Image 1: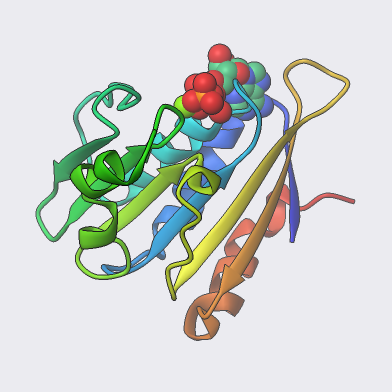
Image 2: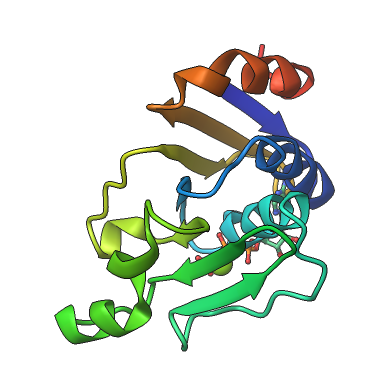
Length: 157
Ligand SMILES: Nc1ncnc2c1ncn2[C@@H]1O[C@H](COP(=O)(O)OP(=O)(O)OP(=O)(O)O)[C@@H](O)[C@H]1O
Ligand SMILES: [Mg+2]
């Protein structure tokens, strides 16, 4: 499905709406150019999952975990990932698709494909504050209808 955002706040809101349906073992793969809004989207999902603290960019640490009451949110930023060693130390293979919810910026850097995942592709538009957000739910048939209903207000024409 394709959604439209007309501000950073709206992207956050779309992400928070989706995030409310995520469960331990799910992954969100965040695609899009530099400055597209992947971190904004990750923060919206994390907020819905109960992360209350500020979220710093994990671009140098590659991954930042956030413990909530019920689960751990793993925020990955693989932009600077170089080589198998770093991939191993980022904890990606350990956590993805197993415990907690993984939110992954630049997933193409590691060529990851976790089973239950949401693929989010954020595209800039002609207007500098507008974004087109494609959301694909993979192996999430149990929640697909509910998620699409909740995101309806943001749907593109
Ligand atoms: N509709 C919108 N949705 C999201 N961000 C927007 C929007 N309009 C403008 N912005 C701005 O775009 C920027 C998005 O930054 P963000 O850090 O989320 O990008 P990113 O995709 O994570 O980039 P990077 O690849 O560098 O990690 C912010 O400065 C935000 O204010
Ligand atoms: Mg980012």
